Amino acid sequence: MGFVGRNGAGKTTTLKAMVNLVHSDSGNVSFFGMDIKTHESEIKQHISFSFGGVDYYLQKKLSSITDVYRRFYDQWDEKAYQDYLNRFELDPKKKAKELSQGMRVKYSLALALSHHAEILILDEPTSGLDPVSRDEILNIFEEVVDEHQTSILFSTHITSDLEKCADKITYIKNGQLVVSQEMKSFTDSYLLVNGSSDQLTESLQNTIIGCHERRGEFSGLIRLQDSGVTQGIKTAPADLESIMVHIERKQTK
Image (spheres, one colour):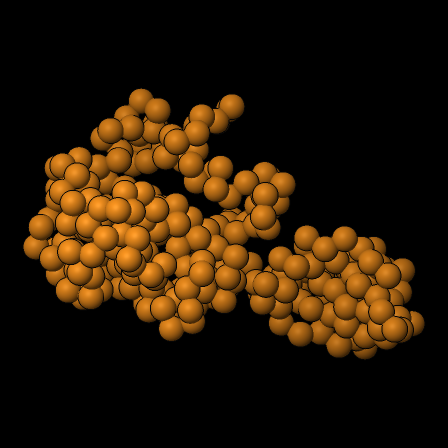
C-alpha cells in the first residue's frame, strides 16, 4: 500500500503514531488484532519500520549495528541476514556514514527481513535515489510481497513508484483521509479534461476539480461518474500524480 499526500499532510506523523513513537490524541492502532499501546513489545517482534534509511550510529560499522539490532528479535535468522548482505553487496566492515542513500535503504531492508517481519512500514524509502536504484528497491519490494507474503506500507512523493508496484493507495489531505482503496480502481475513477474556455459550461464549472484557465484554455479533473457533462470536450485517463495535483490545486484563472 502506498501512502501519499503533500508535504505537511500528516504522513510521517501517522506512521510514527502507528508504531507508538508519537502519542495520538484519539483513536487506536491494532496489528494482528492487538493494540499497539498494550502489546507493543509483542507486535514489534513481527513488524519493522524505517524512517529514511539508517541515520543512526553513523560512525559504527554495520557489523556493530547488527550486533545490537539482532538482540531484540527472537526470530533473528543469521543465515537470511548473511544472504541479504551478499545479495545487496553490503560490506559489514563499512561504517554507516560510508553508505550511499540507496545502500542505507538496502541495509534497513536486510535488517527487517532477517527477523521475518510480516509488515514493513517505510517512510519515503526511495527518496533521493537515482532511477536505477529506485527500480532495484521496488523490485525487492515486489519480491518480498510475492515470495514472503510480507505486507508493505510506504509513503512517497514519487507517484511513479506507486504505479509500478502498489496494489492499494491511501491518500490523506490536511490530516484527513481522502481515499483508501485499490490503486487501479482509484485512478480509473477520474478523467482529465481540457478544452477552450468557451466550452467551460456552468455545469462543468460546478463539477470540475482543480480547474486551471490560461490563454483561453482550461484543464482540470472530473470524476468518471460526472463524465456526462463533458460531451464534445477532450478527456484522457488520469494517473495518480495528476489526480493529486488537481485535488490539491486551488481554483485559478
